[in-house]
Image 1 (cartoon, helix red, strand yellow):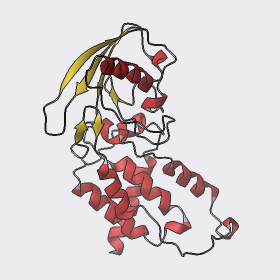
Image 2 (cartoon, rainbow, N blue to C red; image 1 turned 180 degrees about the vertical axis):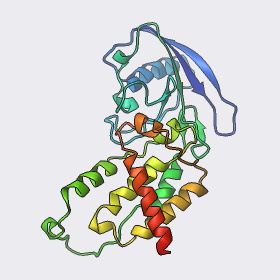
Image 3 (cartoon, one colour; image 1 turned 90 degrees about the vertical axis):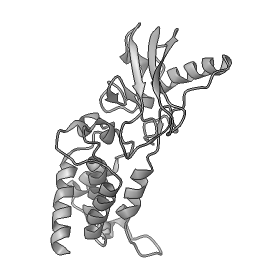
Image 4 (spheres, rainbow, N blue to C red; image 1 turned 90 degrees about the horizontal axis):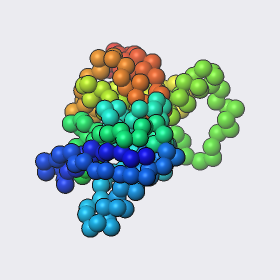
Length: 247
């Protein structure tokens, strides 16, 4: 495949960025999107030019680091897929592909396609944990949990915190991420100790960090690589309301 790439280049967070056009050739359809970037960066290095900075780690669709906005969509055109698991067979020979970083006030650009997602870590630290007694772990059968609750908690816990929900939302809302983390614990016995404080503290931190409000357009669910349901947002709203009444 021969492709034209329009890639956002920005030296640092204080510099003005712009799109730079690159031509790449002989790209295998079996390559992942990031492997295609590796080919381009190797060429740039050989030419004595600065390679493109982009985030990646596991390249197995697990860590959420590969956060790229591709042709106007978070993680690209393939639903339920992270950028590292997106393959070039989903593009056409001769196509022009535009790649840019997440666009959100709470995710400032560090360099090129890399953004600072420390905001998610701060939200998690505000309440995304449980208090448990130290010592030997309890036998699993000592904590009976309804299957529906266990399944819902598991699906919420599959959120990888990549930030695609924020990038896809017109308001840059983090409600899908926060609701997944709140739901994960609210549905389980282990999460009951901080249940009220968790909802209040995580929402408070989310607002303080500059994320926008949720207007229920559903774009977050549509672009989430792990297909987290917006049912969790409804649950977060209930958790927040009940916590407010208790306080």
